[in-house]
Image (cartoon, rainbow, N blue to C red; front, side, top):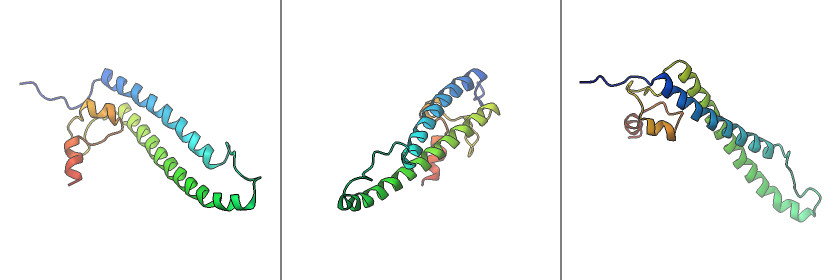
Length: 127
């Protein structure tokens, strides 16, 4: 009986590295756009319009800025998780469930490349 694999081959790790690097590039671009929106680098605001319109816009702008800040924080966390996944690839520990030590299924890693838990471990955690 064949012994189950307990880590991915260098070739498989290389494939995941390419996937993660692509996602990391996209995530950083999105993050830059969000930060640019927050800092008004792309501002086409209403600074030169009437006082009443500005007052109505203030509440809406505050809400939008809070939403942008939340999105930026989530994007930054995603970037950090992807970078941590790259470190695990370099250490050859990528794809190993941190709960039970089994290999995380490739399908899951393709969808969530920064995953550190298998589906079984994740489901058990959520109960």
